[in-house]
Length: 334
Ligand code: AMP
Ligand code: MN
Ligand code: MN
Image (tube, rainbow, N blue to C red; front, side, top):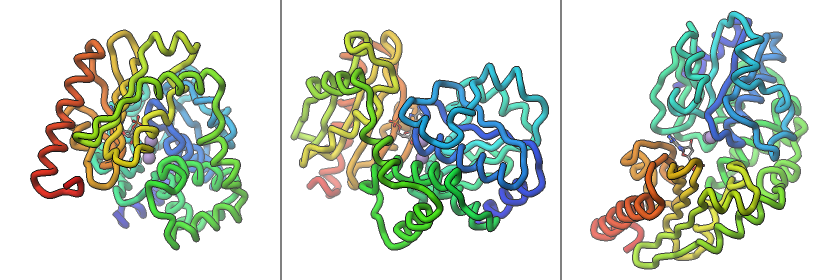
């Protein structure tokens, strides 16, 4: 891994024209890592474009450089040759949408990520599953290359860390992390501004949508599982969009006895995006893998097609069986 970090730095020193991208349904870590890396490379005198196949959620538009993110169409019509394609916070190219086609044509791909199921699709793979956020890997790269941090680098890095640690709730704010956060703050990042945008900056349509999801919330104490859902009708009633459902899955774990939270989001008629979150003892990544998705042990997701009742029964049935099995082998829930 140290060798891969060094190889990534070599590419950053040698190449001149870069494209940086991240996964669809972009989050604060994907966007933060991409924007921080783009600023880092620009500081090194490189030509850089950030491309993303989707719309950047409005609550991330405060990030320096967010307004310069190119759509797939804008990128295709404006950018010619490139030396290196850098993909951040993305476990496999299938999660890039149409940007995957561009990746296939690239002669040099650098993959920077922290997902344990990363498929190592790059020519250089700086992948560290022990890192709480991909943005921390960008921080490490800046350190390795001795590029001084500034606000354009520090703000998106801290946003990535804040997002993926749930505001330091999912990963301990230990001394090392505290020191890094201190350095980012000293370089111009405001922790309270970032916390505000990531967690408490939502339009009224999003709050109404949250209300509907909370009304649908149920908890089954027999296997410690909280579930909720939002249908296309819910979105229409609230005049809400997909990005307005960001963070809803986290509410299930507010329940003290909950070990797992599952959120079913209908993104097209009878097409569900399923998000899972868990506490320490329950591995939701194995659930996501079973249904063709991915993620992390405590945060994972996948898509499933079918009517809500079928999708709901299939997923909860699987999770229930798994939870009861865990009880038998003496895991935390016993
Ligand atoms: P989400 O529930 O969308 O916030 O995603 C939680 C975690 O699971 C993130 O690390 C995602 O990158 C990952 N994830 C979500 N959906 C998929 C998928 N279809 N395939 C692979 N990983 C996914
Ligand atoms: Mn992400
Ligand atoms: Mn991440």
